[in-house]
Image (cartoon, rainbow over all chains, first blue to last red; front, side, top):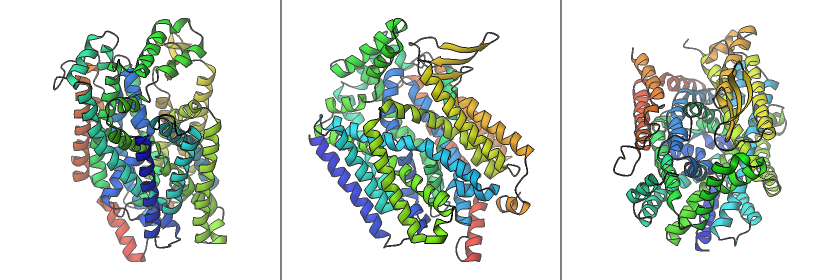
Length: 541
Length: 79
């Protein structure tokens, strides 16, 4: 129960930070202050908050769970691909989004697209597709909060209550503090996780008898030795994954966050230190996830390893439902929590539980982003601000925060978690496929609104197609993928144990390439915006 | 020339991410416990940080900030 009490204290601190941010705003009811913290964030808060915004539950629990099943490959697959691509996109795209936002007063990417391509309703279509891809995150955040509080309290806090507490806390500080409160909370959460994460690695490592002996034990076991290499993942899949981090800058909450910096110089430290921050969080999570396989005296971990073994050896002869059940049993998303409970002292387990809650609660930025998009892309664009004024616009944004959180909570109570986990999988590919919108708007004079519409519709179509495909074709047992479409002996579409492959690559590869080609060809075939508009964006060209 | 070198550095680092030569072996174990594949990618993250420093130092788009500052001074506040 002590860890749960520590988590509740932490949640109280987080609400206080939100209320403090509200007081700092001194009753300002300006949209720019509520949604963008008056574009005033300093370098420290900007770096840690931007990083914290990206550190979702997936980064902490999902990375160790993936490493538990697949080995050290997780680090190169997800962390270092992001360590290169994300800061690069912030450097190339984030700085330009910031400058245009400051110059023309944009508060969302869609406002920029509407201005850049002289379009109205096409902007609405982009906004709706972005919102649809973002919504599952908020639902999964509520679910993650309920589950984490339930596990940390040893079952004393029921799922519905834990979810309600997390939803209320996030709603409170987003409602009161807006972007300033969200940024401060994210900064606090990132510092907490970086400091106590490092302590946890040392504590758990020494409790396991040292890393050397743990790794030696894994090496000597034929079942676990491959986890110290990357042979469980194909190089094609590994390469495909470098396309996924393109999604980061296309996520509306990240693009909107780029508008909050006081000066462009704030980006410098963020760009330089981002790869190191990723390493500081992911390396311990991945390493501990792999080492968890060696915790043979934990019945929960033993059950997971056994389920994995049965799936690998007898999976082929099983029904798809049986395989799915075994996959769920073998999933390692909670191995970090299990190791904390087993090896860390109670006080540290509590603080780290709070850190994990922090990651789970990263949905705050997404809630605020959706509220900003509604207030700016819909309410303001269709005349609401003109008719009712800025104060009503901000209040509308706040009411939207409440409605959105309540809706997410109701859905979280009634729908199976796996649906939304899958939706998040598709969302990463979807936002990566939307990234050519930003590249074209900022770097190509010849891009047009019709090219933008083609990219958006293609993305929506692909996400739906992959979702329907994976829902109708069951995942095969571990081993070779099942071929669904082959032309002239070449495997075109295959169903893999973990998802779908197109010519051996993840769907994100053809999705991004398709988007880029559509943007080029449709733009070449359609009328460009007026020269005066183009000149405002490419004055130096 | 400077820009070309930086673009080449980004491309080289992207290629180096695909270290297929470390694919099937954990050896040598660095510090006695860290498989080479993991150590390589820890070094990769450090190299990525170094590359970002080079980009920030030698290719910073300072003209964007100057343009914005010019507009703010002229207009009194952003458009």
